[in-house]
Image (cartoon, rainbow over all chains, first blue to last red; front, side, top):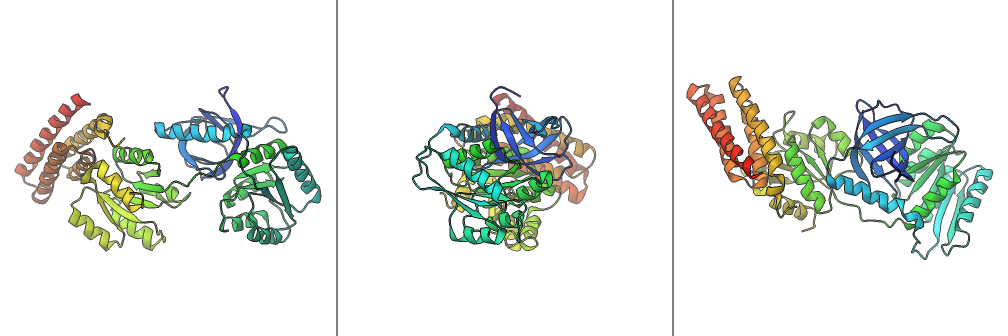
Length: 367
Length: 98
């Protein structure tokens, strides 16, 4: 790994060839490499596509990577996982990862600008652990201007009640809790009006607890015994992580790599989040992380007609995202197909990239 | 990006177009009318960049291929071959700009 590695905590979602999606978290990141903590096994050279990295309140980035090596934990406290080298598909992807790195990596040294207390809810039934964590956090803030307000919940139902009544900046949730487990608490948090509240899951439960809590929506998982330095680092970075507006997401479905690159570059330049699908069997994967705000679907694809795909998405899977056919077929035919499949409309490719981008902006209310 | 997409993306377009034309020639040699789909896709790619000459010519091959698919006639096949040649020449010329 190169020398500019930063120890940071990020949520990572990765798909290796033939593997189910693995949700884990990273502990180190550099401009070239990322180390992801996981007990899942990958082969050297294996392609990871996609690799999605996210940090609470900040936009996530999606790219690809290849496996450099699998690492085992040789001693207590060492991390087991997989070292990946980024395989950026475009310069814009490289820039997005660099931006995420700079946003998070440097922020431990920045001074938070907020004037209100940073509210933390600790959901933990062990009084000993509660005391340890509370003392660690108090020590972290000792002598600082930033005030911190700590609340405690002994079990899941109490936590849910408190989260409904108070706006928290962070929830730290134990995996095993009386009455309602940590996974259910996290799932409930993600259904709250402020569903984006950062959540750190903690447990002695190892990989099972890590997978379950991250899959239920936790941002980070910390093993017990807690590395209090990791907790302190998260607090520092959460305090200064300025929320950024969530980018509108456009999903492009087309079997032409050229068209996907041209259109996605144009939309990325305008600040949109873009996902591309060339093979229909990867469509579910592209829809999973975050429902797009708009879908453009080519009509004549090798596996199926785009209007049939659109109908199926709308009727069988309940996808409510506006869907537009995107094709070089004649307008009259596109209109007929769009109407028959009961989708929002069509954008003809013949109008050229500039006009296409304008149509997209108009549809998304940005024109 | 939108200001000068043609210049930036022309090399990639030419690469894609050549692949499609070569595949089209192979399909034609194999008497396979899937050539229609290749030309339709090429017309779409050219349209995005505003390369109208290629759009028109790819459409001409597509129309000839549809005619050939419907009739199976030798002259329809020859028309495919001729229009495909014209298209290939145009893309070769574009390659010099790329």
